[in-house]
Length: 467
Image 1 (tube, rainbow, N blue to C red):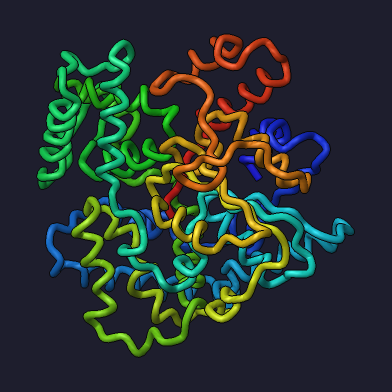
Image 2: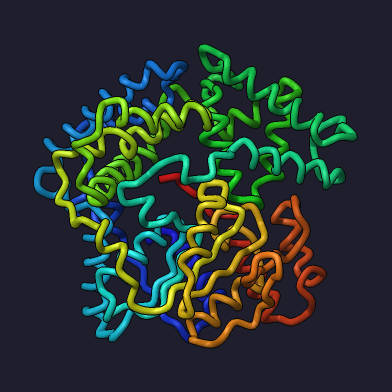
């Protein structure tokens, strides 16, 4: 609900004011009740979240993560009681249906961003007669989310997207803060990776002390989890991140520490959300298929070992639930989704995909292979996560046209064979400059300026959590 309170006006500008926007706190989170609380004491929550800051250097060490995950499941079972098993996407979809009934609406349109796309697809399959038009924006394949997660299906190229960030900075030398800027972007890439490599090989994080109140640690996990990974999904944040990384490369850790450092313990504002998404992922994973108990121990560990090959080590911690322990979840009240996902959804679906550092090529190929005459695919030509990560009048118009039931006016790209939208404004430019130069970028039409500024406001303030 906080996102809607802050940006409801901006979203309304994008979809058109003739639509009413309804949002809600999903069960177990924020103002809904009962809340997800797998740990009674805050120090136990912090200890669990501290797993993010644990260093796993060898594939043989994955059993440490497995044991931590089992303890988390047990804590949820003890402290959540009967409520824990109902924190899952099918049950949340049922809550959406209750909201539709309460509002007296015949059907419900849905625009789902990131995980919200999975939720929208779930609703459309479970309630095909009540769903209107559904937009899946930057969404994982539901089959991937519900129990078939395999990093071979995803786009395991986080470092390649980091290379794109470096290349973009190099192409905009006037605003690129790295000094001196090498003639070859590959040289800058090598230099930046060398710095990150040095941080990754540290056995302990770097201690930074600015004064008596501002001091703490910054290490490789901080840089990846709070810096690089979120930035990859939010291109308007690239200039600020580049400034911090450039300072770090020059030996000045102050700005990087203030933005990404750890003041002795995991950030407390992540505690509730961390428990919630762990439990939601846990329950959804077990609802996808019923052959998990037939897996050997080696098969259960395999996804974690694959993760080590592709990603920074921190993702081991991040995927601790969804890759191993979720397959033996004692809480689950599973609404088995595997067969239901084969059913055709009730009404038209619109797929929106961008460069997607988290979802990637898999999202595009899934969408392309599943399209028929009642579905749309719109590709937004930027590297962010979901369409709202960069301003694009074309993307906003496509969303409006779809929700209104009008045919798309965007052009078919011959290379993709589908609709492609480009962004408005220059690349690698601070959002303050984009706002100040709105007329120069989109022209003097007041409605175009209003739409553009709403999109910039959304893009600059959106933080993505990788669930």
